[in-house]
Length: 92
Image 1: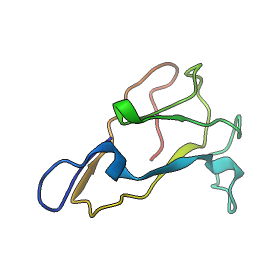
Image 2 (image 1 turned 120 degrees about the vertical axis):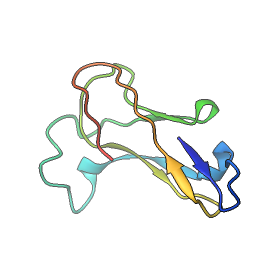
Image 3 (image 1 turned 180 degrees about the vertical axis):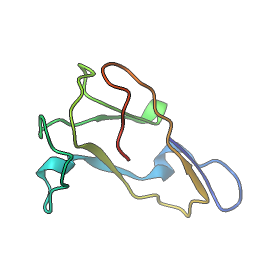
Image 4 (image 1 turned 120 degrees about the horizontal axis):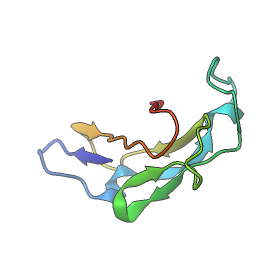
């Protein structure tokens, strides 16, 4: 993940404002059609790489999410996806 500020300069990782991880399948209201397996699956935030990484097994599950609240205004946000295993899908 990366972000650019209103001045066109890149933000540092701390300014992305990572708040924590959660699983959408344990929230209310629960998203329809999304929650089919392992509602306790959680990603891991790797601040040194500015990466929200799926579970260690790279197993396809649903709902693993991260919450970000930037600490400064953002002009653009880039979220890059890399396929690790299983089906090539993601949810944003």
